[in-house]
Length: 485
Image 1 (cartoon, rainbow, N blue to C red):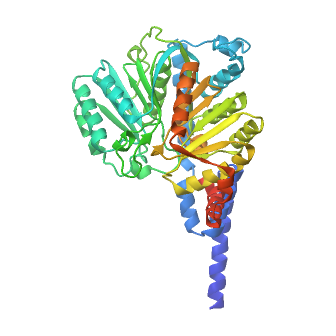
Image 2: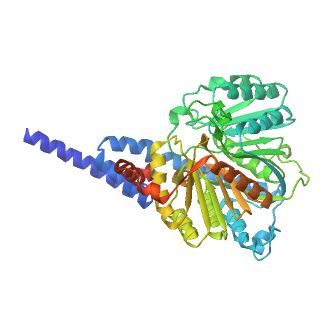
Image 3: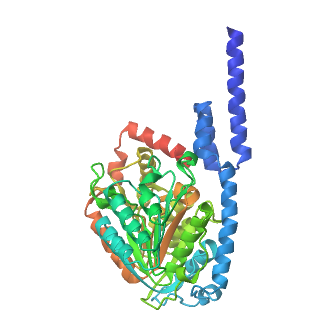
């Protein structure tokens, strides 16, 4: 009996030791992630290895994304070489010039340069945007634009539900495909796991194209395409937080009202959104999109809004959106307003927020009171608690579920997109954000932020410190494991 136990313990130790060696030396993850997985290996022998293969192992997919990055670069260089986009070269050559033409905005020149250099987010001029704060307005506009399409419709979403709204949009797209309009629909494999691709059969039968980013049997929790983009005729672009489904128009029993933010864009920025869709589509589809003139028509000036479309993910060299978030926070002189459904900042963002608050900047963070992922919520509270001590104000939205990924700085510049304020968005998911240099847009987003605060409960330091011991334990464990959640 003792011999059997000794053999078992020896095997147990050997498996965990090999698992630990694999984690530390094979993939060379960042330190926090490595320690988190080592704890999992210690506490959950054998099962921990299975979790790692599902959640943590990069393997062949990472190499795929390196190849994707190279191909994306080739497409981008050909795109830029053909002069298909008007780029403000002055912003890249002389950062002392006030390239944004906004009062007291010189300090943001370095941010413009950062976005261009790290995320290929070229500064585009003469854009016009409409901001949507609810799903009914957003989808009403989108459906109308789909009906009026004359050349092509490129649509990319993380989640596309097989419900009343999803089927309505499929019917609209199938109708346009039957008219001879080019229709391409691109969805994520995990975001739509369990949904049969048969739901898109009407589009395909009408002559349209449908593509999945990593089909369901290949899907992993990591490396998800979280981008939400639409381009119509190369003239109209959509980007933001809404997926497609009735829950996003407030018809969910679980969440009720759904608060999100999306923007409709006219102008030069649509070309960079088109390019982003093209790169992702060509990675997964045999039916490649070429740099044809019909996808990048000449666009007359339609407005005065300047913006940059910035992408980040396993297919980019830098954590571009995280860098831009950090740059926004550090450049703030008066206020930082952040709305994010998931708040798990890495150390650099966390320190930037704490320093800003200690320096007297009005830092306010809005998160949902109804979490859809409890572990994420408890982790967020652990960070919020420390920020409260530095003077950050935190609010929990009680008017439904808030899904907006918005940052507004000094009522001057803002960001709207798909990236949450969390490690998963910074490191693992494919994300895309619009960084908008417009006082009018920033003021509108700030106004909506304070409207949301009217439906929120402020979490004070006094209330936070009265939380139960059980809640403290949940926070501690969740934060410890947050690098792998």
